[in-house]
Length: 492
Image (tube, rainbow, N blue to C red; front, side, top):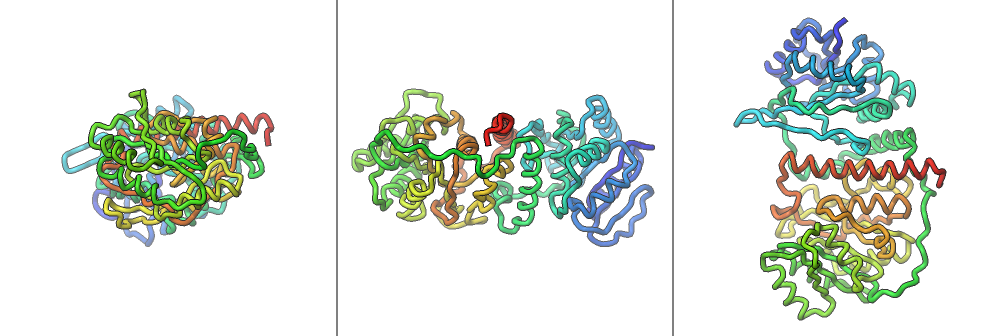
């Protein structure tokens, strides 16, 4: 018996046929199962075509898994053409065998006009449990590990879109998910989604059914690893004791935003409220005209407080801490990025009203994506309706962000503090808060978020994207471990 069964989607063309021949000539593949939307008349020995729906469904996966006789399953889940040689397959199998791994994946090359370009991937960790973790185009599963996982943690539920996600999470509980840091295949002609598509796919209304299934699978996984927090496991907000100089502070960290900072500040100054507020701008040693503009504006508007930190090593989170711990900070600290705007003069009032009335430690609104000229661009409104009061704090560990604008009860946030980084500091804060306290949500647009070349996440390289994703995976890892500790102590 040969060690491999391969599952792949059908892709029309001779390159795909060459890939199938490579598999069968490797001497390692017992059978290739090819998923297609309609019958395909192509005869290659050892290849079987199945005209069916998405192979993420239980209806497809369950019978296939029941009939596999090989030790390993090689899955090609995407729509890209893959070129992989027999020697690479041998290396992947050998590593799985030597480590007893449940899943093995590797780096690869992207085939581009200029030639092959290395595409490195991240190591898998506990917090890599998000459904869009990048495994590349080829994944090796241990069939005994799959069967053990399904036996221990239950069969694949009645799913259409999240079957492989369910299997991956269950396998990862008791088996290693191993990243082989070597390019072992080439992806040819892969379609690249736009930045906005990739970043905001999980809040696209067209993906609601998919996301609901992913949430169900992930929540079940948290229960299996004892990291699920029930809805009633929350602390009540402490009574206010200490006085604050104002009710709310709009905090704006900034560095080199000469083109946008004045608009952001004027947006904050235009807020109509029934309480006093100020604007704390933390100027992180700008080297363009930002500092001069702030000095001029602060001279004209007493509510604007211009802070230049003594430290030179601050990221965005560190700048937030400068404003948060300042004696100028109000009872509530409200976010405004230096290149964004509030969508109306009522934004600050709406946010503070919810913080006052709802016993929330944090409130998150919704925002609209716009270009530099403030014209709406796809995907438009980002409202994160995947959040629910019942399960939002658990589902937050599955996704990569929670929305904006963000506002905090200053007392609570001073006890936590922001990580001194310039990416993911807000996400880490939200996870930490919802571990213990309630988060309120406003699903109407309160904020205009500019997408332009000046954004800190614009046109990132693969390496920079990997660093960002690895950071958030580590934040999730730490948070899952903390929640397991809570549940292990029985603090419900």
